[in-house]
Each structure stands twice: as structure tokens, then as C-alpha cells.
Image (cartoon, rainbow, N blue to C red):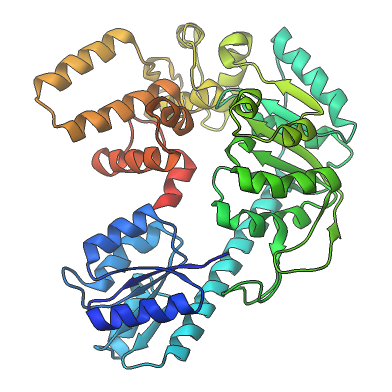
Length: 456
């Protein structure tokens, strides 16, 4: 497993030398002399480390760090020949993790890189721990007036009392993670950890380490042992979200663990056993993926000892008034018959998540106690008028592209579904959504998906 580094150095010969030496040490390295190109690369790729020269061909390295450090997990190390105490302080304030003055030995640089990697790992583990502590205290209430959903809950409650693997299927926004938490809550494992693994957000080359951990020295930058999410979940429930996004090579590694509940840390020899309950979720048709060779049939059979289909909100509209009241509670707002009628007449392609976003937006916009007049739902006539207005302004192809992404996101309610329609990657959709947010401040009032914030 490689640690990725971006070298941003104005001096061409030093740039080549650093790139060569870092690659010899086993790092994956990209390089550039341009601040503009560096900004593009940092937004498109998830680098662990960036080495930044203060004097670049087209901008200041400090300016680049100051702009990007709030939006990325990349660790910036400033390397410059124009160093003094004031510059070092300015670099740290801008967001750099270290400051090295030229000339320097490569050993000093390597120590700085390894220290930054260790800091990054500790920050990630702290985030995992904070998430775990929050999840353990998080309370989930389940009520329904829908016969279809009540039947689903009865199936889930019966299955939860056993230790069989459960596969949750349903459209984006139907609440698969909430259902998984409910399974954990009513099971005998309720007092143990509930750990979420977002399979779509972990790069293939990091998946094994994130899930199973690694030993010290397992690869370049592995300066200490890391405990994986599987070990943290021991005794509790491991929730594999978006299981359909796991690449085929990773599926093979995952299969053995699902079968045996045993694993080895990356770089380790000892086989470790854990006692976890596995719940997986997907919005994709895994059986079709098996037929296309995109998903292993043996892994599917292991995961779906019990398969549960979560109905979309349009099939359980009886719950809309109750859900609306639940989402309004935190804002201390109310909804009348007019608002309920409007909510009941919409099909909610984004399901419960879209309903929640709509209610929250209306609560923030409403000036009185009731949100009825602040509810904004898409209508065909409004969209047609918007299109007419857009084309009359002679937009560029770039504007049209971004408008279409905005339209699809409002219509479908998730970046994953937009990516399917456009035939592109989720990362591309997230990049377009971020560009829309940067242009307009928000996306027609709809908050961007959390993962879009992690690609900067």
C-alpha cells in the first residue's frame, strides 16, 4: 500500500531529484512546478503529503496552502530557500504541518514526511473514535403507520435476534443506515460498538488497511500499528454500507473474513478472530452485477442470509406526516394541512433524505411558527420556465453541463444516481457539485453530500 505525495517545486532540477528519491523510497509521487496545476491535482487526487515551495512559477506556495488546507486532509510541508522565523510562522498559520529550509538533507525530509503521515493516521483514528462514541450514544426511534414498512420492521426484529448476516436493499435515501442501527439496537449486541464502513469512500489501495489494520513497518509510512475497523467492531455490528461499490480485487479479501470472521493485519502473520455481526447495504442490484461479472456470487451468498428490501417513501406515504413532525421538532416549527397535502402529493425520488432536507430548508426560511408557505418542491412548469430562461441567455457548454448536473441532483436526490445517469464516476459528480457550490453558494438550497467535501 503506497503513500501518495505531490511535489510542488519551482526549481526543475530539485523537482526531478525529489521525485526520483521519493519514488526510490516506495512513495507514489506526482510533481509540478505550477501552483495552478498543483491546485487542480490536489482537488482531483487524495494525496497524503504535499511538498510545497513558497516561490512557484505563478503564485505563492503559502497562498496555495491557505486556500486548500481547510478543504483537504493532505498534510503540507513547506520547503524553501527563503526561510526565516517569520516565514515559518506564516507557513504554520496558513496550514502547513512542517517547514524545511534549503539546503537540507533527504534524511531530514524523510523524517518530516513520516511525522506528517503519523499525524494524519492519528487524526483519522481520533475521528473514528469520536464517531464511535457518538454512535454508541445515538438513540433511534422507530414508528410507522405503513403496513408495508411495519412488515419490514417485523422481519428485521426477528432477524436481529439471531446472528445471521443481513443484506439491506433500497433506493438512496430510504434510510438503510438507520435500519442497520435499528437492527443493532434490538439485538443482543446493543451495548457493543456499531461501526460503519463506507465502502464507496475508501480507495482500493487503502481498503485492506482501513478494514483490517496494519502492523508497524508493513509499508512505507506505517510508523506504528493501526487497529482496523473490524477490530473496533469486535462484539458488535459491522455495517458495510454501499457494498456494491467494492472493487473485485477487494471482494476476494473481504470474502474470507465474511466466511471465517478471521483476518490478518497488513504486514502481520498472526490470524486474529473477531465476533461481529455483519449487516451490508446497497442501492444496486447485486444479482445483475453477478451476471455481469462485477460482483462475486460467493460473496453475495454469504452476505444475504437474510435479504430485506426497504420500501421507498412513495410506497409508504402514510409516514410522511409523522416524519415531517419529527424533522420539525428540532426547529420548534409546525406544519398545517396545506403543507401536509403538498408533501403527500410529491413522489420523493430522494426518499426520506430528500424529505428531511426539504423540511429543514423550509424551517430555516419560514418566519412564523408554520412552514407551509416555505415548502419548495420541484414542479414541471417551474423547470420548463427555468429552461426557457436559461437558453435565452445563450449559455456556454460549461454552463449547460453544470445546469444539467444541478437538475439531475435535485431530481434524483443523490450523487450516486446522478453518476449512473451520466455514465461517469461519483468523483466526477462530486467535483461538478463542488463547482456549483463555489459558483452559487449552495445547490438550489440542497446541501451537498458529505463525501463531496472530502475530494477537495
